[in-house]
Image (cartoon, rainbow, N blue to C red):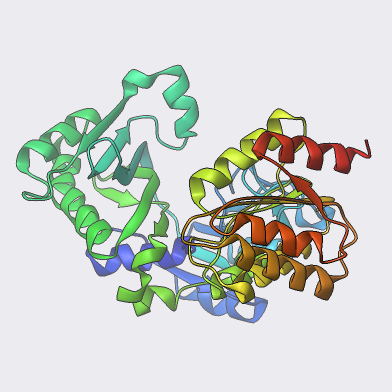
Length: 398
């Protein structure tokens, strides 16, 4: 689960991290009160969407101006002008797609005197099964570009869960970030704070880009991007309360209510599969034969008829779907249950696009019989390769 920057900073501040004063704004009526509560003379007006690259982004609407989703304001009048230009308009970044995301919230923050910009993130290092810091002196840039061009400028440091962040770890991080004096002293406090926040709140990602050294030598978290492990949210009702459903795909929200693993994509072939590995293989083979998947959908190993029908209907809500591939290996899940769910959903949705069904495993013969005797226009497939070719050909009109 993702949250907005201002929410992430509030979480980090509750652990003691240094962040600037700021005020979230949900409507133009809130702007004047927000700007009056901050000292100035510099205010930063930040669009709040669940996507990176806001500063370099562009608004779709011409009246929103050309300055991107993060703007410096040197007067209270400028703050109001920028707020009017941003709120309600669509911001396009490298992570939003061509349509962009509507800006429904702003964060007005006190400005900072910046000496240096650094990069810091934390994630779960799968190779060591530990939480790791990733730091670089190249803050404010896309870390992927830094990794490509100058990988030697990135330090990845895994933390021993039995000891937490040690003095030796702090020394390595300070050295990698070239922190000295006051900044190095701040690092001794900040790095353990971030580790504690990450582990206690079950984060899956914490990115501070940039982490700044101010002209007075102190460190400050200037931006914050935080994601949480969805499987651990039951432990954190306070975090669940931060969820902004307007930032999420409606189909993904509905899928979560059915406990379905669903992610919307940009392709034309809807996929319904059981098991994440099989789902990934299904998406890969669709691409191999020249089309793109419209979604990742894993119905899980023990889905019943109702859950299967719900998954099918969610897939059909995507207007880009021109064909559907159902690829099920019946282990815990039985093929006849899948067949009944598919048939129920097809009848309810008045399916008007090609449907290819590949079943294998428990009760496969019964499942195939149910589909064959349904009287519906369903294309059977013998294996994954056969299924992929059939759905791609059907979508292309072959």
